[in-house]
Amino acid sequence: MRTQKGVQVRVPKKKESITNILKKNWQLYILILPAVIYFFVFNYMPLYGIQIAFKDYKAVDGIAGSAWVGWKNFTDFFHAYYFKRLLLNTLLLNIYYLLWSFPVPLILAILLNRIRGDRTKRAIQTCIYIPYFISTVVLAGMLYIFLSPSAGIFNILRESLGLKTIDFMSKPEAFRSIYIASGVWQSAGWGTILYIASLAGVDQELYEAADIDGASVWQKIRYIDLPSLVPVAVMVFILDCGKLVNSDTNKVLVMQTPGNVSTSDIIGVYVYNVGLGSGQFSYTAAIGLFTNLINFILIITVNKISKKITDVGLF
Amino acid sequence: MSKRQKKKTMSMSNRIFYIFNTIFWIVIMFIILYPLYLVVIASVSDPDAIVRGEVIWHPVDFSLIGYKAVFQYSEMLRSYGNSIVYTVVSVIISIFVTLTAAYTLSRPKFAGKGILNFFFIFTMFFNGGLIPTFLVMKDIGLYNTPFIMILMGCVSVWNMMVARTFIQTSIPNELYEAAMLDGASHFNYFFKIIIPLSKTIIAVLIVYYGVAKWNDYFTGLVYLRDRELLPLQTVLKEILATLQVDKSGDYMVSISENAASINEATRIANVAKYCIIVVATGPVVVLYAFMQKYFEKGVMIGSLKG
Image 1 (tube, chains in turn purple, green):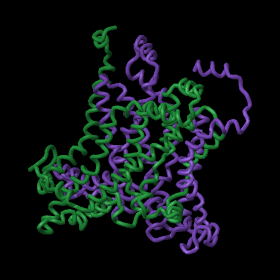
Image 2 (image 1 turned 90 degrees about the vertical axis):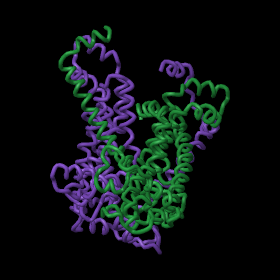
Image 3 (image 1 turned 90 degrees about the horizontal axis):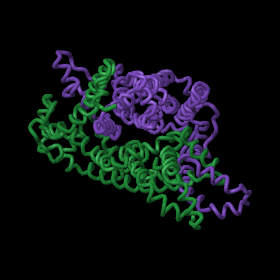
Image 4 (image 1 turned 180 degrees about the horizontal axis):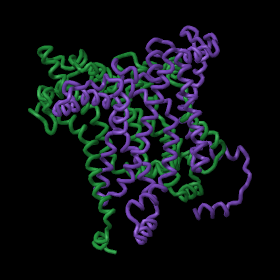
């Protein structure tokens, strides 16, 4: 910090001409060019494709040539009989998931921080990251295997207790629990990284002072650890809220069975099935735009509220 | 205060806390590791023992027929090769694009920095959605080519910001000033100083990008039509579809195509599903193990401000 300030003082600010700046920095713009091209092609060009949400897309006419239909695709969706079910399934799945996936990593990080012995700590850390590296497909495969009514470990356990076997994966009422439990199992350990990093940054003198005052471990957690995690936790929470209508379509798609469809049918899966399966491009593009807008509004609102209450915000 | 004294004076409530914490972590470790352990021991057990529900704590009737069937299954091997190619090429591109952009954005001030930042961050919060992206990719001719598999999702803004934070915080600014005084260009500085000093963050990026690419089944599902191009995870997804009915359907049976009879094929399929999981997840876990040394430090540094 000190040196930076020193530099600022030493070099008086001079207005440079544009050609001078370009001469000095043209290589910088070359270096960032690949990223700009990448995001232009893969993120901004699809934005141009959004217009088909207001059109009746026909492959022969292309994106620009298809006829405009105004808000028709949107009103069709809002009036469809499955609209309420899709929206409710999506929201419930994500809200329930957030209720578990947000606090669990926090608790894990705080308790991990209290493990005495660096080697044990590091060993635990290494282990709790592993599930994160398992792919969605493999995770779903494991669920099907473990929950299988014939030789799945859960049903073996039930049988040994004298209970009837259950085909969990075709039970609509079990779907959300399975989704949440497997999701927390897979990502909670990974989610501790940010918190552990900020706990490591806590001033050690605070703990020493607490020791001298005779504070218990609980008190140290309550008055030192938790407050130091608030800024990061708020940021994570804001980002999570931005996904409330945009759940993990990839995972639900591989967990959906004919049996559990009444709770597992969410907007993202519907868009995939109807959009790419039956080729209703314009209609599903409109649905996609609708969820995108809700997410966008959500994240901005939560960010604003959080800035007011905790003074922490993403932007 | 010495350690022994500290222990003596430890209060009752603290002692209860540490006992609780130990039990808590033993339970958590079991929940996390047991499912993985179960898959591994089942994959080397006899299929009949698995069906009888005997494989719980250790392998029963050790056998490798599942692995033999998996490695003889041609579609599985081809998609495995595809996945390796897609992942390696994609990660190289990812790292190059991410680091060059991160370097530029980490420079203190230059014309257009604000606009560029907005250009990237905006994509984190708003995107075209599945269908418009699909149609545009089709229009520009990336549909059903290996390029879509390599390029789709190969640069992430989040990783770019993590790398930028790393360059800002762990490479001393004095180096930059000295190099500039000596008349070094940005190219010189980037390739001769930044890259060699960024080993930690490169390791982290390899893991992040490599895992995401290797584990992605959705891009293959949406953007590929030719079976020869499919990556491993997309093929696994199809196999999984037959697990749903909990009978090893056609696909799993066809995995043991060399088996003597249908019965034998179904029998082998019961163990092969475990072997597939081990084979598909193995490379990623090995990658993680190799990068472990750099990993922890890099993730911490990158995430502190990211």
